[in-house]
Length: 220
Length: 220
DNA sequence: ACCTGAACACCGTTCAAGT
DNA sequence: ACCTGAACACCGTTCAAGT
Image (cartoon, rainbow over all chains, first blue to last red; front, side, top):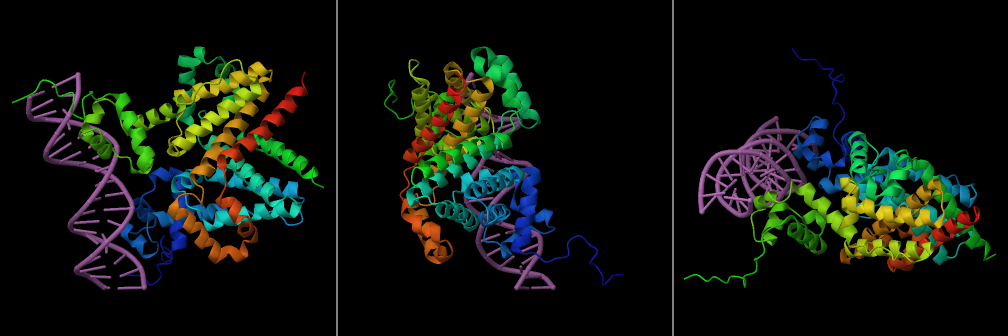
């Protein structure tokens, strides 16, 4: 005895590239990107691994799509903002996305591919700087500095020795064993273990923006 | 008929953890860390893959050893230096090591393990800052800022869209297709493609050191 | 003590076969 | 047009067997 209405079952919508990438992002958020495999992703979607190849070129295509989706989730800065506020908003928006999806910095490094969405983000920052009056050379310098700062903090956060359950333990056991020969780390251990990366990031962002502003004031 | 002296053959010295890691570093320098496998590494050493397990715990043990070796290759800053020069020397030394072994930033991100050699590097920087007169909180801020800057540039360099042979082409073909909607990237393309990351890094390092110095002068 | 072959459980991917 | 099972070439790793 069969029913016509099987809309109530879990897997209704047909497979698409979009749905596959969405599921991959969810899987990576939950289990980390290292655990992601075609077979597991297929199972997540109620399908065999080989079916995925009807909608994506290969696994790399999925990983690229995941990078794109994270960058697309960063809201564009509101256009009426002062360039300082625009940079703050763009920076914090990127940092938030990297915090929500820590695996993306791993993908950015390991794939070394320039994704369209990442270039769109870059274009936004370059526009802010150019409109603020920076020369081409200084706009490029500033982009490098801002991008490095953001990526650098995202990585510090993602690889924080004192984050996670087991890692905090690992850091403490290392301290109890090697602490004597590392007096400064020992003394600063509480600060290191309770590091608020978001605040550290914003502190550094202010330093950089101030530095850029003083450079701009030299010109006009 | 056998000879006692087989010192002339290629594989004389016995297998050790040290030799394995050394070979792994050389392999990664040449082929990239993604290509590294136990079987290939064994072949490189004239031995079956399974023999490696007599000297290392597992592949992760090798990867950790590779991280250690890169950090150990960074020379400690000369002790008599002014703190600004000491930071410059430590920063440039780290950047040079990351340039010579671009795969290490990949390992740092993907493994998220805190290695003893990396902590020794951290201890050096903390000592410089503390000796210069920074408070504990500011020493921690400064470490975060300097480390983020260094890691960030290393990654920008390792994933540079205009580096390598095929990637430069990829960036140019992307430009010819999407350049119209990205006027700032198009205008700055020559700067982007000829970016001297080492110089960009040092430019940013000076900005950071100046910012730190002004913070220090507020105190005394 | 150290090395090895065979085996196991996993990969990404191809391809002929199904509907 | 889309999904599948079997297969291929590769992983990391274990283990009993060799010397």
